[in-house]
Image (tube, rainbow, N blue to C red):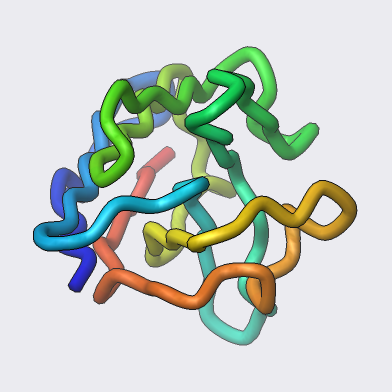
Length: 121
């Protein structure tokens, strides 16, 4: 139901823009997670559409920007990419906003298929 795109192979310092779109459904919040091999899925950013507020993990704050002006589409602009940003990136969506646990994968019911981002040094 969620279709993510925009991943690729880039060099350290480069930029990438990920997109995620859904059809036939609108959401309260949409966000991005990533997962590197052997690691747990990690929260990156989320946007609460009703308030227009965005939330970021400390590891990407100031480098990544999440945006979305419709309730079924979200983008992630990634600048200043580092090798440690290498992971499969997943978009996620939820019908309700979980104020306390918006950073937990379990707070999202809908997931995209993942798009690979590889940053070489």
